[in-house]
Image 1 (cartoon, rainbow, N blue to C red):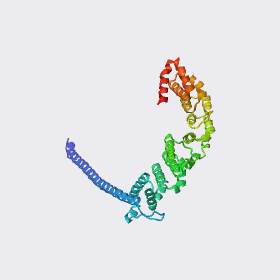
Image 2: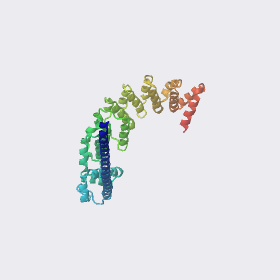
Image 3: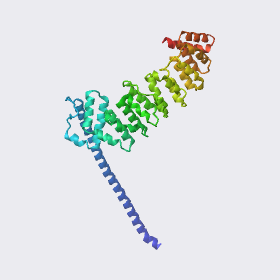
Image 4: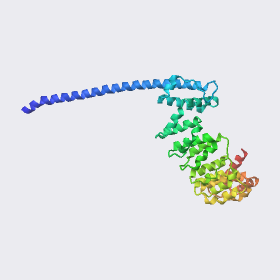
Length: 366
């Protein structure tokens, strides 16, 4: 009991001291947090203010370039203040100015666009883009590639060529678009070397880019033999879109390709390039294919078929698949008067076809 009485005040003292330490630590933490928040808010406010100033300076500089009325020669210098020259070394300002220049160049044509390109080179901004091509971050590389081709700096196409087969899909996409932007159809020569697949979306982008350019007859037949399936498919799309009739026989070989997507694209291709014997080749392969390819063949026959194909098409009217019956009826109706007459005769003793015949006649009349 005596010991307990002696230790009680000591325990109480230690308890008070512990509480005091906790309060002190907690107070210090709050003070540190407040200091941190004040510093953070200060630098954030300063950064936001700088960003506003950077935008104003960039806009004024771009406006000056767009409306520059002097004679623009390679050695001509658009007036730039000392402050701008000094700010170019600032990464944040440089990125802001570069982004503004690229966006403006993308939306402007003619002399004003040339002035923007001139300002870009005058400030040596392309050197930073070339440096970014060596970045370890894919998004920085992709942005640098896009920057160089949007500014139409064709002199750097050899630096961009290796990226057309980069392991990163977005880098590949930007580099491939860049090569087509620089060289048109001849820019497609990267198809000789690429080992990675060209996505469906990328094929659409490339075709869209090419649609704005005058067609040039590049050699496509070698791409039909590529081990890269996506290259073969893209080549078939080029043949179809640009009506390369001279490659009919090369496309014909693709009907026996081991890859089903290649065969399907070849069938679709024959809707645009064909001879009098094309339908015979399609029909001879009809029963080897699945439903998707069979429907594609019938759809092709709607455009290229003749009355000689009518006996085959009439047999398809017995098929249980509604879509196949409809496609066959369309092909018969579009083959000529005999085909339409045969369709009417067939419908006279098959009531199930009446709705299809009415629909097809309505489509012809429209």
